[in-house]
Image (tube, one colour):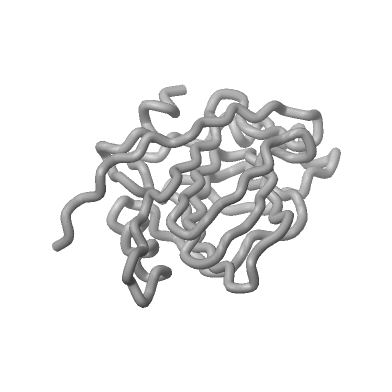
Amino acid sequence: MPAAPAVIEPLAFMLRDDGVIPNNPTLPLLVYRRAIDLTGTPDPENLIEETFVRNGWGDMWRNGIYPFTHYHSMIHEVLGIARGRARVRFGGPGGEDLDILAGDVAVLPAGTGHQRLSASPNLVVIGAYPPSGTYNLCQGTPAEYPRSRAAIAKVPLPDTDPVFGSDGPLRRYWQG
């Protein structure tokens, strides 16, 4: 079994509610740079999936990131970049535009708007969710907004960090 990776401190971004995209009023977006060492692996997708499953974030998908602003009001989400790179806007039109690369991981608290602005042709993202919560897709319509704000407040904190497990920094940043 490989040695546990050294814990990396994430970048933390508090994204503001703009009246359309609620973001999360108490929990920051966390971005772990080079969180998963993909050096030499022929199957980075599998390595990221194994990492997320080992740490309790097992409901997964493989794809890219939608090119329109969207968010999930009833569940937290993690995005692991397996291949390529992308420029992603987190938080909606007034949010943070970040370049994310293979090996980076972004942990989005419920309500965090996200949108792919550009990507390399080989982009592969592994997305996953903690066991508590329900997947939904919101696109920032006026009708969604009040329901989404109410739902975000009810989403429970995950038990573990998707990269570093129970000893990871997520719970410290998300103490609520």
